[in-house]
Length: 150
Image (cartoon, rainbow, N blue to C red; front, side, top):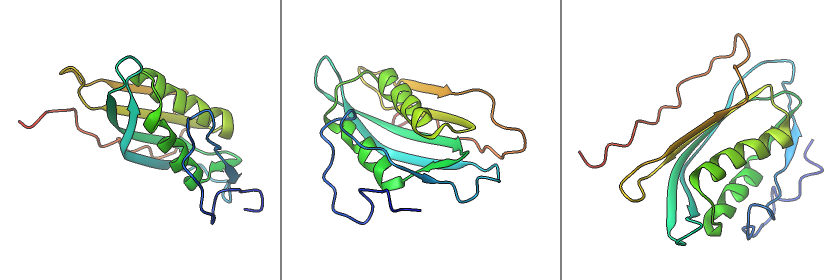
């Protein structure tokens, strides 16, 4: 099942960019069952493409797999590769979702990008592939709107 993986169980350097990052998948051991997988990245970082200043987000990725599931170490390295990558919030959030859809062909996927304020305005970006499959429990993402320190 894991014979084709190249990063799991090995010391793997952080990819220099999202384009260079290798996302890997493995066969879903429960492909006959509709269930939800959630990944949370509360310390996601990227760079503003204009100023080079760091941007920070709390990402929540939910998906209902079919034949494939994402290998979590490769996902961690992929998300980490944005650390020195310049892109707007919308591009990062939706690009991550679309890349996972291309790799996994899930029954359903949604991503919530809860971005911390830049210039005094927080930006939240949401994308999903359609309605979730019937009968699958899809909990709320659980990220409160930005309130500052108040």
